[in-house]
Image (cartoon, rainbow, N blue to C red):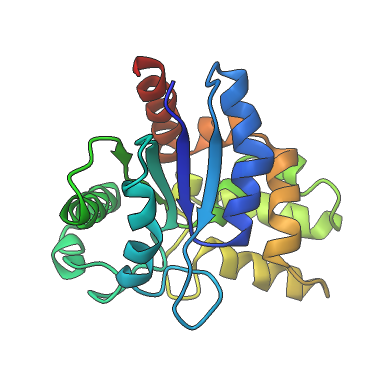
Amino acid sequence: MKSLVFIVEGETEWEFINRLLTPYLTEQGVNTVISAIMITMSGGGHGFNSIEHFKNTIEPVLFRKDEPFITTMIDHYGINSERKLPGYEECIKGKDMEGRIAKMEEKINEVVQKIKPYRFFIPHLQRHEFETLLFAKPNEGFYLYDKKIKEEIIELCKSFPSIEDINHTPQGAPSKRLEKIFTKYNDRYEKVTEAVDIAELTSIPSMMEQCPHFKNWIETIIKTLWEH
């Protein structure tokens, strides 16, 4: 079985892959070497601020002799310009959100194939961002927080057809909503230190149950690795 490399935005996604997703994939029979690499920015730090940062990070992996499977965990919410993704303007013409994301994933694949024709690449954008996953089972994920915080998050989730639809305005992204709710009750949402703890209490199966786009990605990884 080929090894698997995740190209991720930052520390939270890196910890999520190593602490939660890798053990889950192992339980599903993916017995291979799994690693996560953060996208490095030219000025220091990590994040998806430019397609060039992504290209510089993934290129060495594309030329590894063992030809690992490579996939991405990048927030769709943060991609908002041609600088971040060539073809962005074309992608956002459609009104269907899932269609937009699918086109963006195609554009990321095109970027990769221009570096090197590579048949073991699985592009994935998180809809809308990592924090979407934290809404999958709020009564358990936010169990350790103030009761009022948990109750407001539960009501927020009920107000949308799907938790993957939670994002209406520039301040409507899942992370922004969490920050606002925590602040309202004199608390502070710290993504790097708290998000993966919440995700662990939530569980991968619950995330897959509530997030079809995420579920499809995980199932594609498992199926593809088993076939090779």
